[in-house]
Length: 86
Image: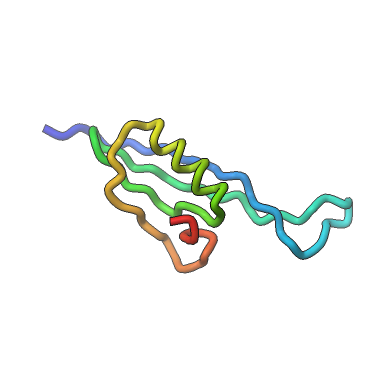
C-alpha cells in the first residue's frame, strides 16, 4: 500500500551578479530559486535544482536530510538557472 504524496520547498540564496552595483551600493544579485521535493514513502522527485555549485551543495544536503531515494529531477523550463546545478 502506498501513502500520500507530500512536498517541501527549498529556497536557495541568490548568487551575486558580476555586472555592477545597485544605486544604494549593494551588489546586484539574481533572484532566489525555489526547488520542490515531491515525496512518497521512500522515493522523491526534485524540480529545478538550481544554478551554481554552492546552490547544488546546499540543495543536496537538504534533500539528503529528508531521507528519501531521489529517483528523478524535473526541469520546468530551459533557463540555465533552473538546471545548471543538476
